[in-house]
Image (tube, rainbow, N blue to C red):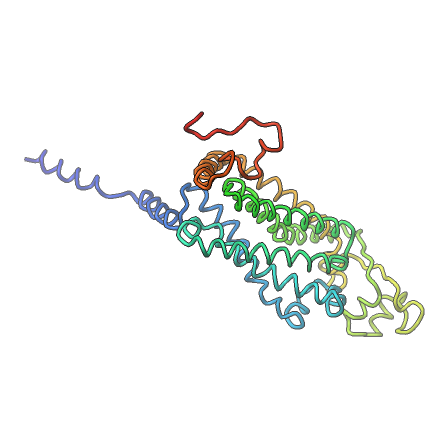
Length: 344
């Protein structure tokens, strides 16, 4: 009798889930509800899509150019952005890239792609349009962005070219029902666009380091410094006597500013940010470029699954060479002909 009772008690306790199992079950329910098939994709989505969403939301206030943006822009930049084609450029850039940042997050939720196809398509077209127009705005302001150094201009130019090409490749491939390549190029493009987030982090860290070194200087125009300090003539004569008085021969010249993030003066902080921005954006771009390629190469099964889906849809649509109707490597490079899984 005792043995029977103990057996019943033992059997009853075995049906209870350990706390860790309950957590795993809840985690599985969450990511499957959102449509993710692989458990590792969900935390990656939270990290990268969350960073994009948070960064974008934090900067929506900058759509108020004369208010929030003017107060928070890098010291000296608003001197240029406040008028002429620079103001048009910054308005276009922020007015397009910030909405694009909000919209692109939803493109990477599988449940939306599968159950709200029309929304996914319209949203995708809007993102492409917004990013392309924002690139035009970026090119309009790059000459004065963070001082407009050649390193900055080169990096922004490369980003504009690659994001434009990436969106073009993604668009052509989805029109040809080449879903695997559409996925790859959209991921690449979104990671390229995310470069600016990592750039800000690297720039702030580098500004602290160069401040500790203490031997870096940046050239400002006298007009920029005077604008930053609201034409404080006493300050200008004391700190930058080489600039002279307004209307003198030297008033529109240049002044050397010590790059010091902790100096307390706006131009010194701005000099520290300008000094490091070009370097930061190139390092961030390299990290994002390599990182997305590593991810794509570590997920060959997903690429193969989507290529099989592409084959079936292209075959149904009557394309020649189903499975390879889009811009695939074997059409352009030295690669073996792809065959569907049933024919391998």
